[in-house]
Length: 264
Image 1 (cartoon, rainbow, N blue to C red):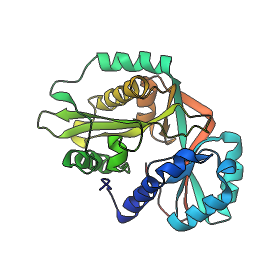
Image 2: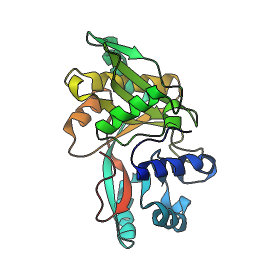
Image 3: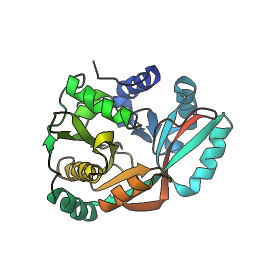
């Protein structure tokens, strides 16, 4: 088992993304978006294939698209009845992210919290509890295999409370294949903090820990995170870790015109 989690649709999409791991690694323009199929260069990947996947899955992810091409992308998708939901991209190189994140982690955790081990079993109970916290926070989780790093370089960080519950978590991985200009860029996200522990700066701490890992363990050159335009707390959190908005690129997902937004 691969530790699929969520609604029937979410689990089916996770399975499709996992089944295509080798294809994503070896296909120019393809990108591992985790929860869906996706690409970071639509022209290289090919619109015939994008349309085929949209017809099958009803959703498709786009990463690091030049802002100047978004209008054309939206128009192309609208012809098929799809809209393009976008997230702002925040980026940092290793030097800037490490300075800021080391300072946050160096201040330590509030009393009553402790760093926990990374998940190792894709379908284990501990992994399921991490996924459950993500889902409860409005974040569609990745599969257990992706969270545990069994399908490629990845890091999932966890903070626990004194009762042994998962209090906060975040995840980072390398989504882009060797054909991409972003091959050594890490994606960071899936940040979730238990409702009862919010306001304790656990979000900034867990995000900073994840950032340290993607540079030290995954050897990324940069990190990027995605934040919706209206999510001011998350924008402040990623900026505290050294990331800054990059208006030159956009990330998003194509979904049916009348459907709800796939994830926060």
